[in-house]
Image 1 (cartoon, rainbow, N blue to C red):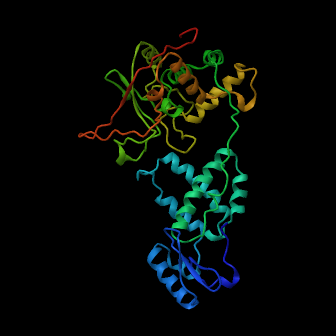
Image 2 (cartoon, rainbow, N blue to C red):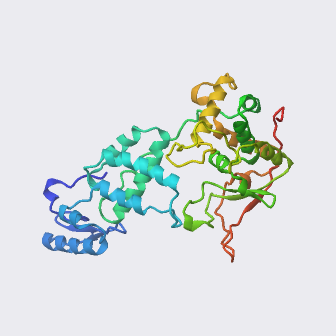
Image 3 (tube, rainbow, N blue to C red):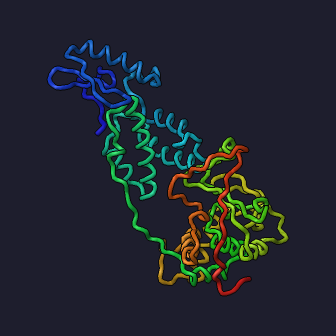
Length: 377
């Protein structure tokens, strides 16, 4: 595991280690391979310092003098330069998530250098978190220490040696009977959101972001939130994310017609709030008719409890708005329709490239099912 140098080796430059007997060896900061440096300590030290200057030029002057690099400084540099695997900028949602989990680590190890953070320390921090935050933090730390190893700033990666946690699924799936109880008691805007989610299989964020301007040429166009929000990547196609163009059939048209009312809103699913000037749960500015993502979740959950839609479930077992997606995919498959393109899932890498006119390649899909509820209002 990573550990500070022993007292007798404090004067040693990074990447220089004792070998067998009186020999010295140098660990290449990029490849990780060791190279023999002979038995002359002075020559080995001088050579290691020259190699470090050549192979790790990014290390700042303070770090060169002190002999170590602080975790906070290095991890912050990683965060600022973080990109997706394809080189595109990460989305705002992903960046905010990284910022939150990274800050917890930086506060915990604010005075420590990279090579002073041990496997035990990382395990203790991960064990203090629940399953999802623990796994996301582990992924972030693994990337940071991999980069640090490549620069010769620590001998190994303590995060990679930890074990990933596997959650026991608590939340149950929706049934048609349970969902209908919730829907029957819902306000019109929430009933519309439920029906759109069931017909289109889209996520909560994509449902509340649907606009009337997304409807043209007989299709509802959904640029799923999984795509990057970088304005320079307006025509991007990325693995696992989709531009879905849903054909508006008679069933979907019924729901869209029901969404139209006397409220002047650009959003298909909307409501009149108590006050017009407001911020979302993440601090983003919302249109006065726009539904906040946490608001729809809270209202749905309250109805699930008040209607006793699932009397056999308790606490976190009660399915949320998000679980409508699973039921929708099941119903599409049961009807003999493929839900993969509609849901925006990708089982293999998308191979489409930009067209000559740099137009988005939309995936054309049909709804394929009718709303299964007993009554349409």
